[in-house]
Image 1: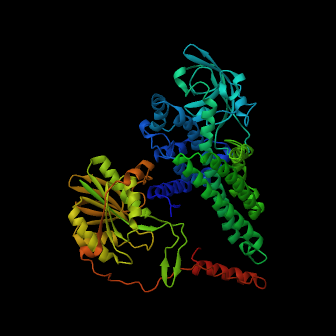
Image 2: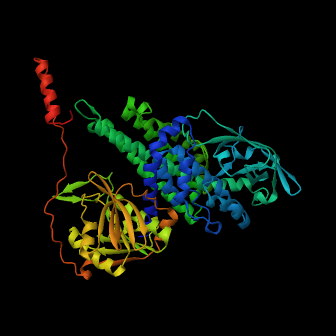
Image 3: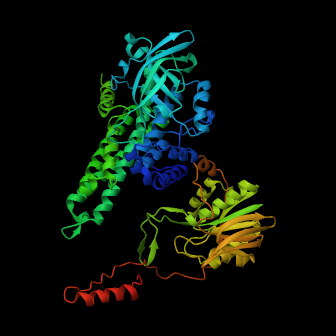
Length: 384
Length: 252
């Protein structure tokens, strides 16, 4: 009888709050923010006011210290309203998580406490122009000089980036050591030698800012390094093992929206003298969306539950959740366009945006191919 | 000073409501704090923030009303008193029970929503005032404490009037009174620890409802779809169309 899928009363209230905020504040402006590629800072501020921003900051640093189940609840609701907007708080959690894993108390107070005192964001800088999936091949250099590191290199596809207070930068002090030569270091955005280029022309998630960041001889004190010298790669992987769960949760929100929009339209639109909802071809699409949605949701919450319990099974489970949820969501968005036909293909209706947005969920925080590498490694590890 | 908001839990406006066996079924409906009552809750929290004192939410309703009460506590109210009774109870009977609790709480200012979102009733606030012998001001759009009295603006059919009322008094909220805040996540976590005192309605000597609902129906709106044949005598058809728009539809 130990299985119990229910949320606590507070989690239900959180869900109600996030759902209401998503419906009343985020959804009505989603199309406009997408079209104008506009970062909705006023929504970030509101998110801060109601306490839904940076929720994982621990209590000792002035935060709520909440876990991935709570983040998944928020992710589903905001993903339903605008996946592009949700990427902003989600990427901030991605920037916070390395500190939860490896920061000492002084660093938590110095970097995380300010995130609870005003609307502000963190950011995570791992990918580079020449490396993504092969993260250990990073080329950004961290050269030790007395009690400082001098950081030089370029980071690419960084969500939040310039909009954040700081980036957790992964850099190598010895490329020959591959992943053992990496450090994780907090680099404040106002340090001398840091510059940003906003990335334009994105297919979707256009409310979320994405940057190229250039570090040109940026001097950063040793006290900003997280964990030991050489622990950076491990910190990055431990981070992503957790933070791909919110990507799954946002995808679940997209899938739910796709199903809702499809079902609603199918009852309103008539063909051959009856609502298209009466046609089995449409019913099968709705049913398939539902099968994907329900299984992805329950598995996403399962992965979040494992991670919050500190169960190492979350490493594989979060990869399964991320790959699966983003794929069923992509499929649901694709089928939603088909259900709406021509209306689905134009931006007067919200479904074409779902497809453009959720494509990114198959790519960022580890491509779905990398998720499969993680899953396969876990299968084979037990047998070798 | 002490401020009270009387609240109710109602179905979310987006919920699909069904009638099942002549009775409204709330099964599957999302139930929320009545949005008209949110103005009342917001007002008592603002009064407390500005002048100190205590902001208390009071409700009469089924056990599940506690969820709506937690929302009010998450917005910032201090504690709650819930008079529990399952099933329909008319507003006069509810008011008799609420009056007993309010007489004991002895607040200075009581707010409630001007109109209930589910059955559109406007009776509860004035009925509670009647039971207590306190003045009531309905459809309040502006409110200001003024010593032992309050100055309030309330809507009339054709305008508004500003009144000065001796406290304690009951005010029902109208849209525009304030902009209700969202609950906050820290507020939700704190609300868990705030007190909700539950009192069985029977303990307050409330006898059965004076009104029993025998059957409920949902209004069905149907288009009449009147078509005037204009193919033979277009001039006469046009005249008939204008007559109908003028006399029946009353849009011209």
